[in-house]
Image (cartoon, rainbow, N blue to C red; front, side, top):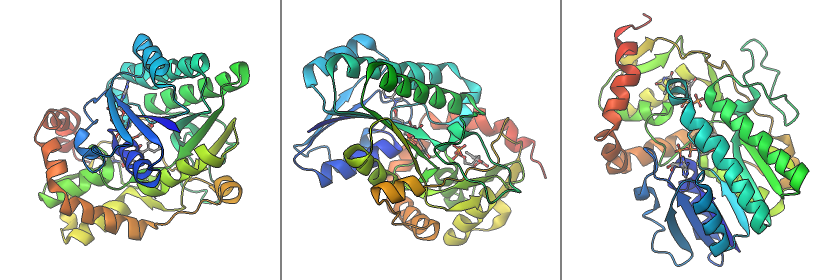
Length: 345
Ligand code: NAD
Ligand code: TYD
C-alpha cells in the first residue's frame, strides 16, 4: 500500500507520518509538503532514514506538479493534512487560505479522479460547525450539525469539505472526512495557544489571553487524532464524515493556568488582550459515531496529555527555540505588538 500524506512536515501530519511509518513497515509513506513557515523537516528526523518513508517538496495546488506526481507514484490512499491552519493569520491574509485549503484540495481531488485511488481522506476541523453558546453545555457538534463558519480559516476548510463530498457524489471518488477538535502535543508550532504559552512562560514573558479567556476548546492529544485517521482510512465507510474528540472541554484561562502551575510560574504573567475578531465561543465534539462504528477511544485525558506535552517541550527545547529565533519574531511583533500595549486590564 502506498500512502500520500500531504502536510507531513506540519504538526499533526508529522505525528501521523511517525505513527504510520512505525506501525506499518510494509507500507510506503510519501510525505508531500511545501515547507511553508510552519513546515519543518526537523520534525521528520526520527523517521527520515526508514526505508518505507520518502519526502517530496511541492505545492498541493500546483496542478502540473500534482498530476505528474500521481502519474509517477500511483498512490493507493491520499491523506490531506496540508493547509494553512491558523485562524489569526486567516484574519490578516485570507487569500492564501483559499489557495492552499480550497484550490489545493480540489487539485488533489482532480488527480485522484484521473488516476484512481482506493481512498481520499480529508483532514478537516470541528471549526466548520461554527461555535456553541457557553450557556448550553448540553449541546455538542454531531456529523449532522449544519456547516456555519466564522473565520476565513474555517470557511476555507468548510469549502474544501463541500468539494470533497461533491467529488464523491458526482464523480464517485471514494472519500472520507474527519472533523477533529483542537489538537495539542509534540511538534506543535508555537503560534498556537498551548505551545505559545509553554514557550513564553518558560522565558517569563507576558502571556496574551484574548478577551476574558472564557472561550472553550475541546482538546485532543495529537496521537489520539492520528489513531482515529488510521482507523478511518482502513475501516471507515466511504462518503462518511467522522467527528473526532475526547470530551476535554477547557476554557482558555483554565489551560493557561494549568500550564503555569505545571511549570511553577506565576499567574501574574497573564495579560488579557484585545479579543480576536469573530472569536468562536465554544467547540465541543460528540464522537459517538467514531466510537460505536469504528471502536475508537482516546488514550489521553487533558490531564495526562498536557503533562506529556509539557515534558516534550522541556526535553526538546532545540526544536522550538530554532523556530522562535527566526521569522517568528516578526510574526509575533506584528500580531501581538499592539495587543500587548492595549491590554484589557
Ligand atoms: P500546520 O500548520 O502545523 O501544518 C500544515 C502543513 O501543511 C505545514 O507543514 C505546511 O508546510 C504544509 N502546507 C501548507 N500549505 C501547503 C501547500 N499548499 N502544499 C503543500 N503543503 C502545504 O497544521 P496542523 O495543525 O498540523 O493541521 C493539519 C491539518 O489538520 C490542517 O488541515 C488543519 O486544518 C487540520 N486540523 C488541525 C487542528 C489543530 O488543532 N491543529 C484540528 C483539526 C483539524
Ligand atoms: P488557537 O490555538 O489559535 O486555536 P483555534 O483558534 O483554532 O481554536 O487558539 C485556541 C484558543 O486560544 C482560541 O480561543 C484563541 C485563544 N488564544 C489566546 O487567547 N491567545 C493566543 O495568543 C492564542 C494564539 C490563542
